[in-house]
Amino acid sequence: MSKEKNGKEIVCTMISGRTLEQAKEMHSGKNSKSYSEAVGKVYVSPLLLNELGLAEGEKIVLKSSFGRAEARAYVDPGLPHFVVFIPMGPVANLLVGYETEGTGMPSFKGVQVEVCGAC
Amino acid sequence: MLTKAKDVVCTFCGCLCDDIILTLDENRIVRVERACANGMGLFKNYNPDLLSPKIRGKEASWEKAIKEASEILSSAKYPLIYGLSSTSSEAQRVSVKLAEALGASIDSTSSVCHGPTGLAMQFVGEPTCTLGEIKNRADLLIFWGCNPIVSHSRHFARYSVMPKGRFVQDGRKGRKMVVIDVRLTQTARVADVFLQVKPGGDFELLVALKALVKGKSLDAVEAGGISTKVLQELVTDMKACRYGMIFFGMGLTMTKGRDLNVRELFSLVKELNDHTKFSALPMRGHGNVTGADQVMSWLCGYPFAVNFSKGYPRYGPGEFSVVDLLCNKETDALLVLASDPVAHLPSKAVDHIMEIPTIVIDPAESLSAKKATVYFPTAMYGVDCEGTAYRMDGVPLRLKAPMKGNRPSDEEVLEAILEGVRRC
View 1: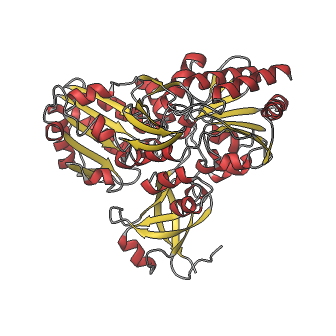
View 2: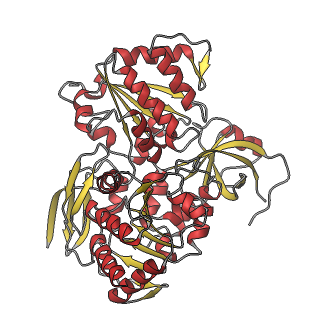
View 3: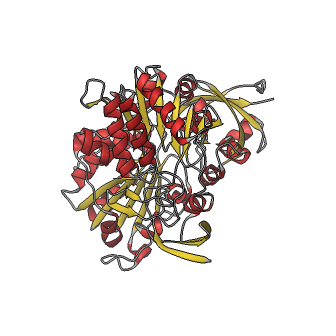
């Protein structure tokens, strides 16, 4: 497990969802390395990546009140500044809330997370 | 010798595209035509060879595995049956029978996709239609919190944006496409209008739109992060179209507000029907998740989160739903039917799965199957076993079996477990 880089943690909103790569690698087998890589990514805005002092492919640590996850950072220019996107799967699920508010549905989207670089 | 199977149904997603052409060589798929990338993966990676079941990771006979599974379920105080969405409606029906025989809870993946939509339907009603109506009539398409280019890749071409319809003869040119989402997704990039809602702002936006449709003025410059002027333009388009359609996804059901967001969306559609024809459809993910809702509703009266411990079905989203039962550590044995909760449920729920005996019935050895106490490698519906599946608009389609079946079907394994449970 990587440690957090010294520096400020930035509060963001995490959303998870399907990506083409996640779906493709799911067919190759969820026990495969390529699946783990496909779901072990976090997409961030270019501004946020810059503020974190990271380059694409470097590790980010994400913490929510439900858990902690590590993922490799990639840029998605379509994301708002403080929104991060993680492909649906075991990494995103480390951060997901389990309160279902009487509906059965946990918060797979809209989870508050603190993000910082990993070393 | 090469043979061709035409008009095969792809069961990857709720589109159930029924025009796939497979080329087979000695019961192996060697070519797939017309499928999207997701459908290609489903067909091309499938190996129909008969495989042995596994008990605690070791190969075992089918008889022994059925006996072990039956004993696990019979001796459990609170068994749960979960999944159902990637199998035939015939297998879904047997899973409900098994839940009743065990006095178990039964829940489908609906509870972690469009379960909140089901709750909203029960309050407001379902302003539904078929995909055929949309293809032939819809001139305004709104995609809200969904990204079909990624999740339902042929939806645009077959049902919504692109096709030339009977009353939309210009195809794409005859339709206006609006996307409402937090992200500028692949789908948003090809829209005529993209409205970027702020995270968690959907309910506010829906309320504002409904007020504007009713002719009220807003005492605000924006709602949900979108300016009132832009919203007024959208409302003008909504009222002026001949046939409007809202497709919505988990951007509404998985985020703050959940069922309340969908309830407000259905209420908006109801208001719009005072002005023109408008419908809404959830973008259903798994190939037969709509069938899971249908079968559960026929047999139990409720679409998901049902408990049989009192001998009759009781409905309890938030109580009898998979995430709640696992996170509260209530269930002590889990049967997974054609789903992968280890990959797709919150980690706290997965932690409990790791602690209890599990039975997994699935054509693929998923993360859940890897951990299973008993794993049954079964045939894949619509590939090497026949069955019925419901398209996302509720239209049932008969699935052929283009490949020769060597493996037992989910339905057959469930029947055998049911028999075993009755003998225990």
